[in-house]
Length: 286
Image (cartoon, rainbow, N blue to C red):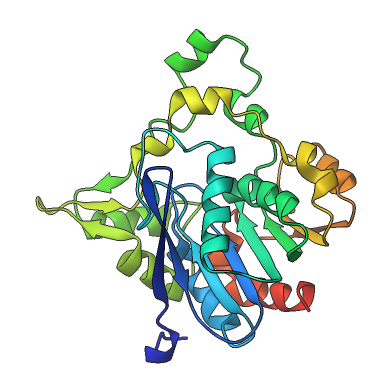
């Protein structure tokens, strides 16, 4: 499916806590559907899903602070602050009753948002959600000094010598090699910036790994769950190692939660099978 002139989204910006937060508004006359990506991706990663849903919904995909075309700040990258960014976009666009779909790191701020906006959010889909930031970041570590010496994720790479090197990496990496060609084209065209020295950089800023904020981020979807009282579909890989622990605890804590496990698919399943995810959305949000 190729993007045409009718499917080009409009950029919207709202200023929140010293940064301009960006969202892509795909238009349409249907009920709004807010899409939230995970770490080291952008709202553009949802393009393939958005193209499939824009005739049914007014699709809006958010760039989390420090990602894509949103501004980056040293602080404000914890889940509570990200929730406020999503809330600001929602209020600026004057969304009435709407739906939300979020992936991975985007799940906790989206769930927190839904808990506070449960009078307007009609239903929610969480794809491979991060559930408890304390568990995810600290991995049981109790010593802050020891954790700071070797924190998770902080050494992730976001630049490459040239586009060819990046493409080779994407096609070989287990987490990205199964993206569709449509999604890969979106990533290369929309999520990458060329640098003056010929290198290319993925559009996320290293400020997203503020170690102090990471250590102190204790937000949990399980704690928020009683107030996330709209229908919630939690979608995970069959191989998800937390499916019988935190995932089950989340679904059991939701007033109206359902768990679906998908076989033979990766963490970023909406980038591997946008048709499946779009159909899932149509059915859950019907």
